[in-house]
Image 1 (cartoon, rainbow, N blue to C red):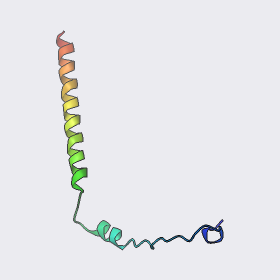
Image 2 (cartoon, helix red, strand yellow):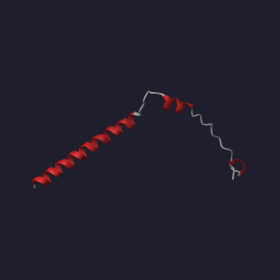
Image 3 (cartoon, rainbow, N blue to C red):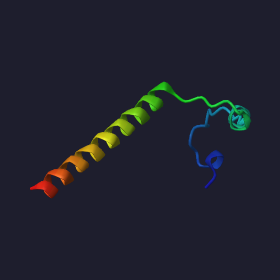
Image 4 (cartoon, rainbow, N blue to C red):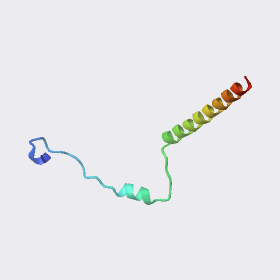
Length: 64
């Protein structure tokens, strides 16, 4: 059932303008949210620490 014939109150939604998204997609400039960049760095650090821990554990088990 269409919204305009359902008896519900009218929708007050502004029309979506995709122009800024298209402009950003076509731009060679890369902009990353600082919070997202920080999270990416923390994930990379966590992965490196986990790999180091696995390496140390493997070395200890190989020697033991």
